[in-house]
Image (cartoon, rainbow, N blue to C red):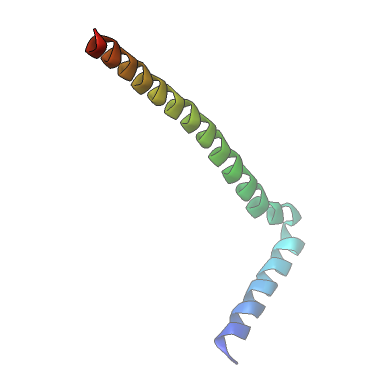
Length: 71
């Protein structure tokens, strides 16, 4: 048998066995994907706030420079 068919059948049998043996275990990968997505969204929000603070500090520094330079 070709390797691709063996791997497909092995995966299918594993899924069937898990569903029969422990039905709730099939939700673990789905929950993991959802939790990873939520974590990435939380990190992106935190990163956006950090970037806004850095940008504001650079803008403030530029304004101070122009105030001193134009005097």
